[in-house]
Length: 184
Image (tube, rainbow, N blue to C red; front, side, top):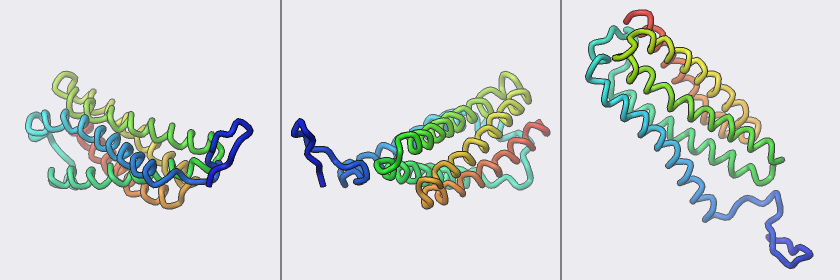
């Protein structure tokens, strides 16, 4: 449904969702950004996982290496879908609500991206200091993830729920990081 303005321009009413083509393009963009962050982070991880990390003292509850890739693939996909759901709802909300939620999501992506270079990449140069700094980053990551759940959940219950496994994994990863920092 379109409304005709005084100038004769057709405009979609504020409460109408974007069209199917725009929704599909947006979903693909959210998936590309999310998995792009994953790819960039994985470059540092792959480069160092066989080096110092292979010989590092790890927590007894550390999953096998293949599990990290599988879990993160699912988490990056669900967080992209959650962001897309919020974006879709943004057409009918005051601009501040969806914009604030997407800002928190952007911060989440940035702290996500910052962790791997600190934990994996900086250890060879700075030793355990890099692991302690990475622990601070992952703590901020957990706060950003929890804030994203809340902000997304206020706009789309499904989006908030889709982010809960992400928060759980970050908290779990925080315990792995803390053990590594204390033991290496």
